[in-house]
Length: 444
Image (tube, rainbow, N blue to C red; front, side, top):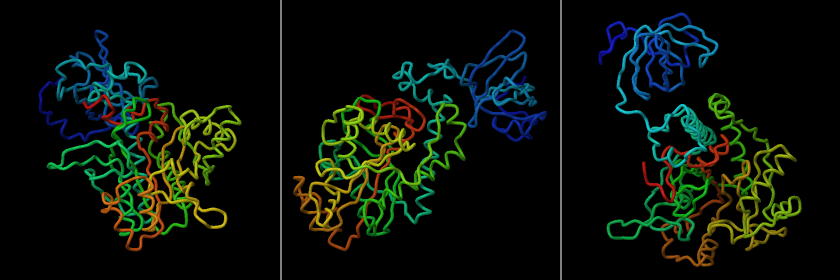
């Protein structure tokens, strides 16, 4: 077996084969490159499970000096069908080369990692634990979700934008902002691109952004992050929030179809199912939702929104009665929505100042989206800013554009990690982000 650091001339003639393609090379000699995922030495015979970007495969040889797990290696050998091997094929090693040896054993046994065992340890060593098959699968699915988001919106005439992440004021008011010193001035990390994407509706009419946002909330739950990937859209010339929900309905259906085309293996690995998206996702006003949960399940809902248990029960109801994993909760009260949310109309066409055209989307028992129609009238916007006890002067950079013919518009934001976690049955949203940031974690 060769051990040189440069490949022999014969290896250079063979193109690299990925483990997922071994079935196309049955009986042929191939060249594999990857990591030592697992290893066994049975005396005269050595087994190496090699992992590459596409999966794992079993390689069998003799007389090998096996390197530590996670070492980078190259294997040249003959492909042979084997019913008990991963993927149904193994490689009989003819040449084995260590490309880059691990200098110490990894702190975690990657093939044996489970998300419900020592979760903090797995996050402490995220730079290694991410190599696990399940960890990679979650991030692969998220990548496909983002790709599907881009693709569908472009097909619908949306333009991608990029908005500032260092801002002078919050998009939603309140104190959940990370402060920073900006050359002697007070600045903040953006909690949302909301105000900027509204401004950009006046430029492109339909816009979207995929970017991190920041929330200085001292949560310590399995559903919150302080930095997460937000999938934002805003669209102009709408009649009401119904247009926004219709767009999101189609977007989700398109994303799920893409996952069926690209990620069935990842879902199977994680024991998860890709949901069907109804042609018309059920919609229920908030106050009706609260009453339903109380009457059907005996759960008293506190506060001005739905608490986590109410979200779970409402989702359960629509899964049982309409077969839908999704439900829009609509008509939120003013007190539960940001200042820029448009008021709803009464039956006679007059505005109802206590009710809005804001909505949330629940998926399998958890909110994954907030959206709605925004205020586009300048006078109405200024009244709302004052009603929320915000400083109009601090909002000038945003509010000025509404003097210049802003159309009726609305939009929403999807938390990519939450959607990924719920799709895959991941109990803690931190495992749906490569390097999560929560109230206690700044590394790795």
